[in-house]
Length: 150
Image (cartoon, rainbow, N blue to C red; front, side, top):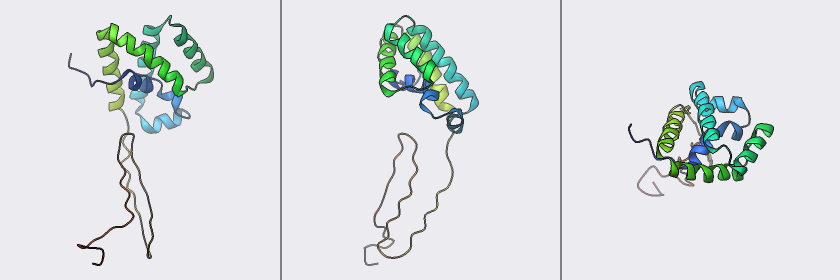
């Protein structure tokens, strides 16, 4: 098996629980393909199965299923148990990393254009768009010559 990208337990838990972080299935459908969303379900089931019997995990699972939402603290709890399970079972770790990698491959890209019109003196207009992990560069002044006076 080729080495899957080394995703952390926290990243994998976040990917698996993405539908509970988004505000509705429509939002999730805007970011991921239907195939990736289905794989999220499989990944989450695999994680729940592996962590079955852990006291805090059972509480978090019951809460998530009841409210259909999850908090960052609950994700951290799952990630902590998941990290231990991954350390104890490298085959399991490779399996869920590969599943998470496949889900990330199904993330839809936003390739829309952005247009910015700036007029007048001393105007600063900012329009930015970046995916998680992306960079935004915001400039107050822009020079098209070699110096400010050009």
